[in-house]
Image (cartoon, rainbow, N blue to C red):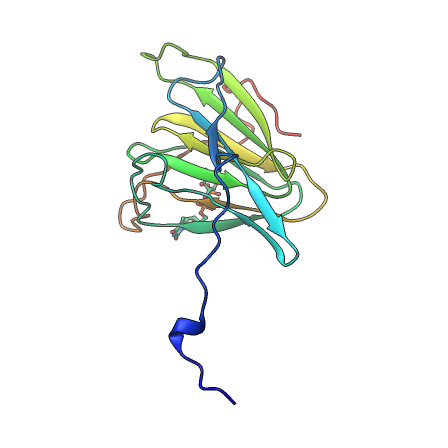
Length: 176
Ligand SMILES: Cc1cn([C@H]2C[C@H](O)[C@@H](COP(=O)(O)OP(=O)(O)O[C@H]3O[C@H](C)C(=O)[C@H](O)[C@H]3O)O2)c(=O)[nH]c1=O
């Protein structure tokens, strides 16, 4: 048998650049500072691949802390906001509703609400700035997962998360 060498390997074949793998979805009615980017999944006979974040197209603040959330059927995570970090949430599977609410008194979109249905049918990277209140619910029939790549680490000594109960009457959205 011929001796294998590293030169026998062939160079990788990148995707073509016909479809941008992270594309802004313009949202005229979005809460100020919120950004939505379409995630593109490319497949082959082995499965598929989705880029969740990249500095190839523009500079990004590297995520110092990345975690996967698994959401049980019907489960609600709400309401929260952060004082320092931007959340950068990648939704690629399941059927998840994200609700955003602007309680920043000095914001041009004060008291605006956005309801986004995301997941398998609408794969997005969602950037939520500090002080924007948000909550998520798994509305699908099976466990759904999502990845958060916030701009800050989760510091157990000083968690940057402020909470309000999900059924608080002060927020005009009712999780069912
Ligand atoms: C991220 C993290 C969390 N935790 C603890 C803190 C909580 O007691 C528990 C669950 O944390 P989680 O961040 O899941 O808490 P939620 O309020 O459910 O937040 C989730 O739902 C909302 C809507 C989101 O926007 C968050 O991105 C998402 O994480 O784990 C840690 O101990 N270490 C960690 O690194």
